[in-house]
Image 1 (cartoon, rainbow, N blue to C red):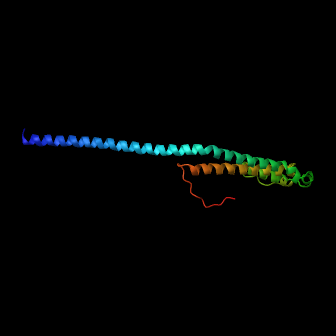
Image 2: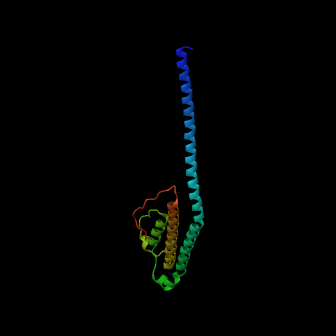
Image 3: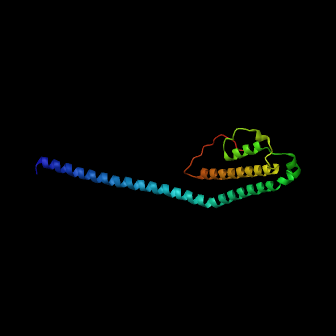
Length: 170
């Protein structure tokens, strides 16, 4: 074997060894990545399991809160005749303009231009207005409770980060 052939043989052997080392390093890196991924999955599964264990309590609390709000609202609506008597209904006429404005607000629509008929009686009793307002506030409180439950769930989630907005809730 000539010296040039020896050098080429040594270089080929070194290249082969380097290739084997590179392949082994690639396998080690892939194994580390799989291990890291498995560790993250295990942590997430543990968090999900803890969340699932807590959820029945949270859901029960939420359902109980909404039920409590609805019961209070229904109680208020049932008491409307006590607070807004037939005499009050007869003494206070609800103008058509009020009804139009209320209906526009309920539909989130811009009301029509005012007209001469707005001052006329609408035929809607004051007690009906009180019942509608009480029902609307009850629905508002139910939605607020649902929002609070969702916000609390999101705060416990590892997928979401909620920053305080600086506002204060009543």
